[in-house]
Image (tube, rainbow, N blue to C red; front, side, top):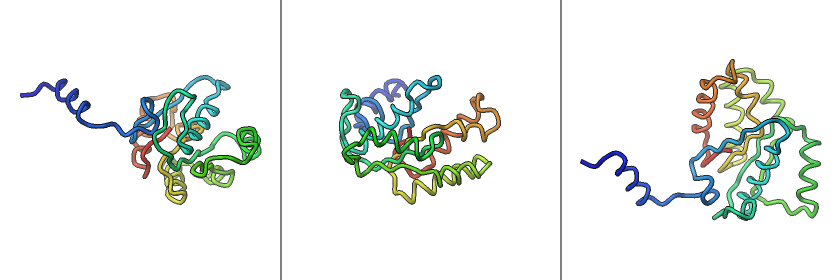
Length: 172
C-alpha cells in the first residue's frame, strides 16, 4: 500500500499546475494579502490584477501565462480616490481590457446588506454579471466584521469557504 506522503508527492509530480501567476498563484487558489494600514496592500492588489488582466509579468518576477478577466471589488476607497490612482496608473488610457473595477453604487449596495450571506450574494451577482474569472477584493474588513468577531478564525474560515463557492478560478 502506498504511503500517504508518497501518494501526495506522486500526484503533485504527475499533475501539471494551472498557474494564474506562475509560481505564486494557482488556479482555484485563494491568495490573502495582510499587513498594517498604509502598507500598500491596495497597490499590490491592483498591480497583481493588472498583470493578470494583461498577461504581463508581475513585479518583473513572476510570469502570467495568459490574460484573464479579473475584477477588483473595492470596498474601501470611493470612486474619486480610485479614479485618481487609475489616472496615475494609466495616463495614456492603456489599461488592460480584461480588468474590471467595481464602483460606488456596488459599494453602497454591499454596505446596505448587513448579513454575511447577503453581502456574499451581492459579490456573487457582480462576479456573474461581469463574467469574471478571478476576483481581487480590496479590502475584506467589512465582510469579516459582518461575521461577529473578525479577529476569530471562525469568520475567516467561513469567508474562505464562501469565496470558494463563487463562480471563479481564484480570488485575491
